[in-house]
Length: 343
Ligand code: ADP
Image 1 (cartoon, rainbow, N blue to C red):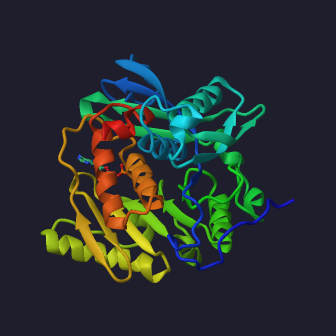
Image 2 (image 1 turned 60 degrees about the vertical axis):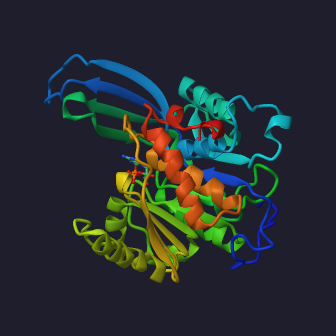
Image 3 (image 1 turned 180 degrees about the horizontal axis):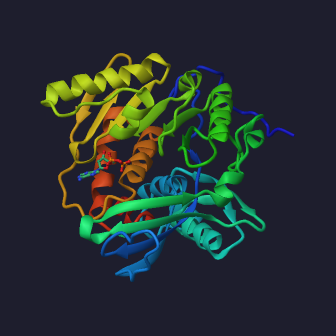
């Protein structure tokens, strides 16, 4: 039985007077990060001793939900009165019935995320990212993702309607590509039919059929993903004007397929954004970098939050650059994301 449909008419512009009250829903991955710090990468068949180990909470879906929630709240805001006025953030996904799943849901709740849309799959494990950090190579990462419960989200669940954990549809839906691709494609189609604005962070990059780009309101990608998805090499070695010309060309590929806003993040070099009528480059905030884990997720959470609060894309990018600059100055994933009072 489908949930009641309370969406906007298809084609209603995002931010129009018909827009729903601001709320954000993330449908995506939740992972335990198992991180080993090594003096070098072990050879095949070799056992070696690591410099250290830590567990953390990650997954692009969970990280982005935490970013939306933390950046919209002050540290310690928890009671309903404190949260009055904060944009509600709903996480939809699946964890296993294990300790990682429990830790994840309590940590998301502490950040202010509504976890009522997270299913606990009996007999399954929570998704895991096994990460090796090679300390001799400047902290270079090697990451193995194991989808586990994240792989259990099926297209059928989203064929009739998007979930409505807060009782209605969200004003913005955030998606990434760490849950099965057929499920993401079904969600895109359903959101489009229900008139819900979608931000797709197409990471890790996978090819999308051209016909789905029209369902994307905001496509947020880094330069590697932009190059992969557009099927063209991106040469950013020239001066600023050549760089912007090159980025315009790649953004034009996505705009021609129906995306409304293209945002390409460039690490320390900032952000390029484009619509069919306007484009521009916005520099990053200069800061000391400690760990870039979750920089992109922090950027996306802050960008999404600013948009649903009525800021323009350029204002939202500036705000998101500020938030991401704080995150790169701290270690870890979700714990590195700033609260509102730290910005
Ligand atoms: P991803 O981590 O997804 O590859 P980027 O590396 O492009 O994404 O980083 C996302 C955002 O994080 C950037 O657009 C910028 O706002 C911020 N950021 C990343 N690296 C730095 C840096 N060295 N200095 C300042 N901001 C940074």
